[in-house]
Image 1 (tube, rainbow, N blue to C red):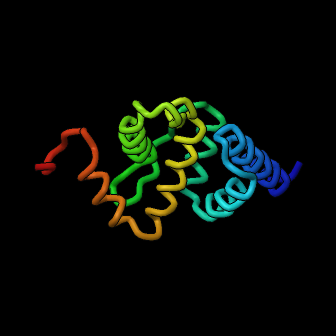
Image 2 (cartoon, rainbow, N blue to C red):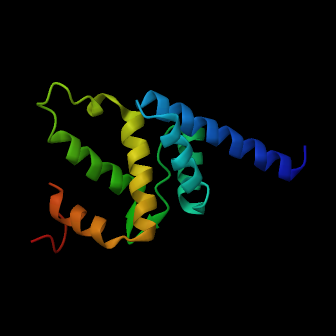
Length: 132
């Protein structure tokens, strides 16, 4: 198998993985396809996805405006904690949804990080230098 064929196979595997995660997260196939289209245009996010697929943990090396996938995920979890008392809110049980939404936020940050940086600094319960 040539390198080109290996790369195509790896991308096809990741594409299907995103579609499978989307289904498990309760998202539509269209959502999965749209997200995959954006992921494959970002080398950094693609690496994060591939690492998670291969090892089941976060690579956390790629950053946008100083924030990694792990930072975005922690911020997302803080958001979902606010919904813990809502019976109908099931995001806390959908790790796939949290992961996909964190990838989505990181992709959006590539386009315009400022609104997300402002939200992460203002909405998290985590203390860090210069928060106050």
